[in-house]
Image (cartoon, rainbow, N blue to C red; front, top):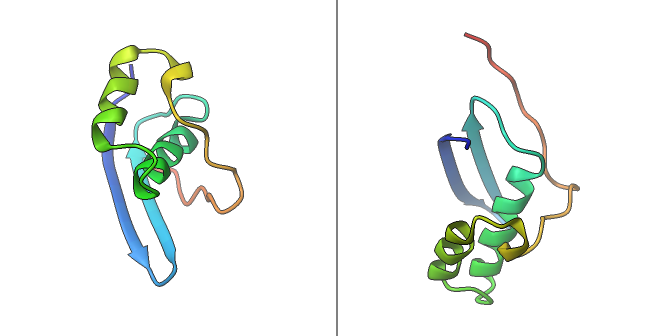
Length: 79
């Protein structure tokens, strides 16, 4: 189980910026979150579909992983 400390979604011109902060992430976790949010943004999923996918506790229930291009690691901070 992982806990997100912050998840922000902002539109900057034609771009959508997603900022995620946590102590650690699962493999492809951010790409999966962005992919699911993109499905909602395109009208292919309703917000309730994200809840159903999370409750399934099965990655196969998720939409798709966003492609890696356009996703950037910005920084790591250590206590």
